[in-house]
Amino acid sequence: MTMRMRLARLFTIKTRTEAFLVTYAVALGAVERGVHYLETYPGAGGLLLFLACTGVVFLVGGLLLDWVKTAPAAARANAQPQRRAPISRSRPRLRPSRFGSESPLSLRRGSRRTIRP
Image 1 (cartoon, rainbow, N blue to C red):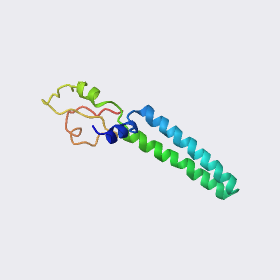
Image 2 (cartoon, rainbow, N blue to C red):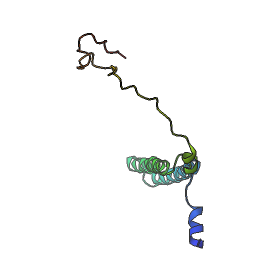
Image 3 (spheres, helix red, strand yellow):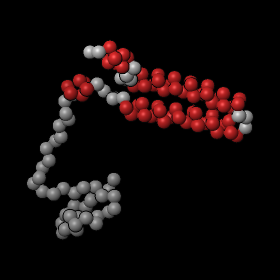
Image 4 (cartoon, rainbow, N blue to C red):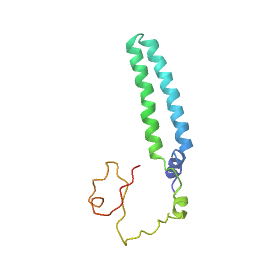
């Protein structure tokens, strides 16, 4: 492994905690820059620039949290997949309907009514 790759690994965000810490650091810098804008440009112009600086934090924080994996790959590989119960295919079952009993299955003679949620 080259020295350049080792150095790059130090600056890689691997966990959500690191992403939150980086977002916090970006927020501190954005507020400091926004205060500078408020002092330099008093009035509505400075306020708009302050809001633009702090708005960037939301964008960067969201992107960082999206880029970080939620669980390590090894933990996901060892996880057991959830098994579903076998489906009985002997006869059609009625499903709950939000719109009443307009399904063709419920219009059959002698069928049960649909279940209302």
